[in-house]
Image (cartoon, rainbow, N blue to C red; front, side, top):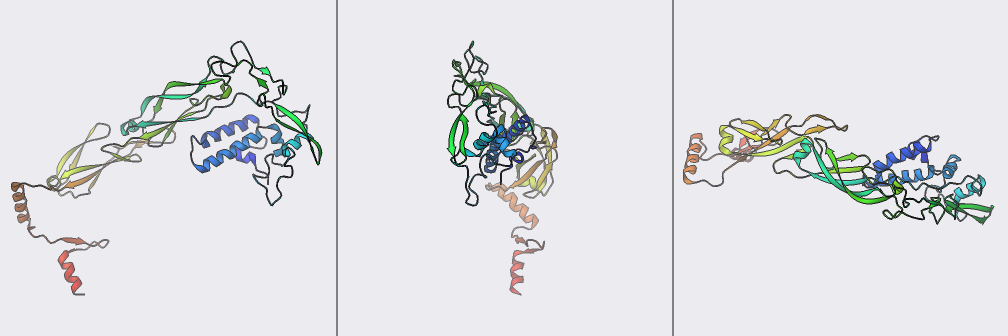
Length: 390
């Protein structure tokens, strides 16, 4: 079966060449390997590129509209049949011979020297504070830019490209081959002008005829509040200028979030651990906690606070960044309490703790074991006794 190139690009069969080009550029920006490294996306990128090459060529598109496939039967010989036109210029060239592709007919024509540029990708390191508040950052990029000497034309000032003598400006040369159908005329890109139909006889010294040069420039990128590691900010038209001074692609700035010494991040929520002395956990206290934005929050520790207790400060996390670039509220700050037991005590401190143990009747404490899941609590030795009476 012939491949459906229209469905691959997502356009109607009566789509104009401009609609086909716009559909391809939209898909290419999403699937280009520099933007989307996923293997499935790369395979899809090859498919849409092939579909665009076919549908942007009037003769190949004519073959598709007649129900054929100018590239064969889908990439290989199906059912052992192979390509019946192999060795004879291909189905597209035979269609040229029978439907006006020969001399004097409407050939493919020269291809444009002006081509769209590629997208570019740049990684930018940001602190957690910068991700939270947003930042304007000047970045230096090294990309192809428009040649200011020839303004993208490729010719030296005062000169212009000349029509190719080999193909006469058609961008292709034709030859006649003998086949079982008789004489078949085939076409291929002109080897002299490479299909452009014209030759730059006096190229620009600055760009060598390419219409673009590499240059280092500084641009300002606005990073919105709430971005996270791996997110990308798109700068339209700031990528590579295309050959012949074609329109520039886009520049994607990918955020690389640096680790923070006090906070860890979970989406828009922040987490931190506060070490609390044993005495403060037992007696209770009020802590002053510095938040990510430099503010201060008072945290009340109730008497008898246990290790692993969590306090949630609502709205003191990061901005919640939506897909449209707007912020919708803030996450929370989760404070985890870690009760620290002293490991070194002097004599006076040891005596005080022994007195406390005596007052609480804990000189010889019986360990308490809690069974997982049933909520029952038994002394360790009573558990042993209960096992012995079973």
